[in-house]
Image (cartoon, rainbow, N blue to C red; front, side):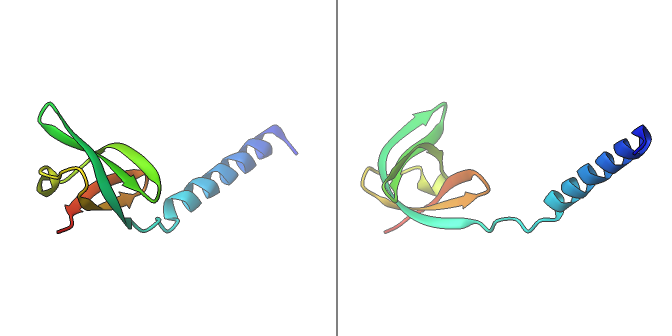
Length: 91
C-alpha cells in the first residue's frame, strides 16, 4: 500500500468514527430521587449536597425554586450527559 493510500484510508476511518459519534442517539436524561444532606451558598449561588442511591453527591447546582431546601428534604435530580442538577423539592 502506498504512503498516500495509507493516509487516505486512515483519514476515511477517522471521518467514519467522527460521523458515527456525532450521529449516535444521545442518552436520554435520567430523573432520580435524593435527600438533601447539606446546603451552602457561594457568591449568591446555592449548592446542595444530596444522598442518592447510597452515594453522596456534593455541591450540586439547583434551580431557583430549590434554594430554600433544608436538610432532610426529598428532591428530584435531573442528570443529562454528565451533569446533575436539582430541579425540584418534594412536599
